[in-house]
Image (cartoon, rainbow over all chains, first blue to last red; front, side, top):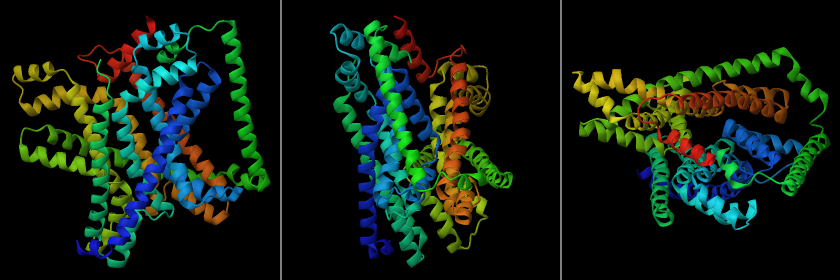
Length: 214
Length: 287
């Protein structure tokens, strides 16, 4: 394990980058995901279509293909962002499709009386979604969204493939220097496990806090 | 669809007009965005016919289809291996022997939180250090299977647990052993019920084979990389590859949904939580 300690700064830098990547892209994914879920239940067919195409496109393309397309492809048409920003955007767009599906299934479980009551009070579709349905739907899908968060954390490692130096990439670099694969990769694996364990615990706490007891 | 029916009334004339306006605005917005993208492509000469023409020729497609075939081969082998591993792990986690249960649980929990890429790097740069140098195919398929078997294990476990307890009790009552009951009664029913989840998880595995990009196993994405470094048509190549993935995976996902829809009508035992939820949502919508 002293290899890990000797290169501790590389590892902590890697973990920091992974955490930044995770936090920023999760925030983006949550935002886009809720909007897309709202599109998918809207009364306007064209908006529903946009939502469906979004989800189908991003759920059926490998994340790595999207990363490669955005990082190496888009500069060809003059769209150039810093590498880290591109990675955040791509991961957010990709995971948003999964969040949208989770939120939509949450909307499906909100009891019908809530929607009817909202309509009876004269709320418009947008208002009833924003004030009545979504707050309850989101409370019901804390667990699935927690799982998506964990998947997202693991998926940020793919940013290593396009050159972002996060935890996986840092571990790989240390290993290339030291040629001690087992301690190095186990160390990085432990890093991910800690992040995921904390995320799992937090999910449980949040769920207990916000869950609606029916 | 059922929920969306609930969220708004049968629209009257004013609402219909508003919806039509919103629809037109949405279509215009999408058209404007696409126009912007096309403009961007055109400005940088990426729409020139000679940049896309290579992709209308057969040799180019033959090369990509060979890559696609390698992708499918890797996905099939990885799916088969991880399903087998998943069943073993699920049975281990449900076993009455504590050592077995704990080791299976440990494996599943660890593998569910370690990124596949880390395993790929371990196989790629770690194993050769200990004198194990696998062929490229296995450098990709082995880490994928190791990681995916944990996911499949959880699916199988959920399926086994969702089955009515009476099934197992009846099996034991007619004198079958534990193993026989599991093999002849429980697993066949659980697998049938799980078919949709298994198919959609296989889509996930198929997507993960794009890690061949890193292993330099010539599946679809790596073939595209080679092609792009050769003909310099980066964006065209990657867009076409993304489209191939979308078509393939969307048809597989469609298959999963069809299987799931068909399952709703099969009157076997206790229904899965998912179909129960769905049935409830449907019943609500009819009120």
